[in-house]
Image 1 (tube, rainbow, N blue to C red):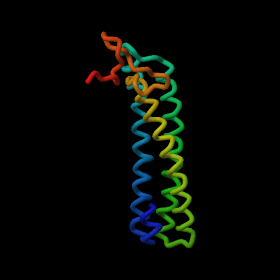
Image 2: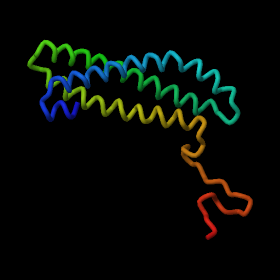
Image 3: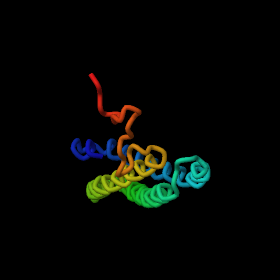
Image 4: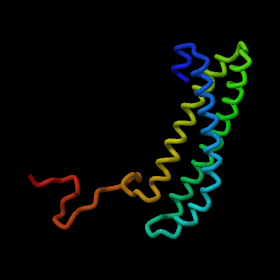
Length: 140
């Protein structure tokens, strides 16, 4: 979308709108498979319900925002195809909203990773090995 706005290329803007629409459709697929994945992960040792719940909540927000972005992109694609005068305004609004969606996408990915990857959890400390050194300490 940035490239389309800078180059004033309607084709590039339309492509960006289309990609955002596909992203919204992919969010539908991700949300429909989430419950099944939760049932599997709950049975894996080392997982806690609080991390799963946090991920579920952020995923719901991310999905909702993705759906809204897809809707705005549908309007933008329609406006571009019909050569409406407000196409650039919709494109700029879409770009700004995209950064919000990207932020929540990052939050969702990180919260999902924290379920199984203890090293990315807040408050994580590097465990000491049998010599009493942490993994980051090196004896040269």
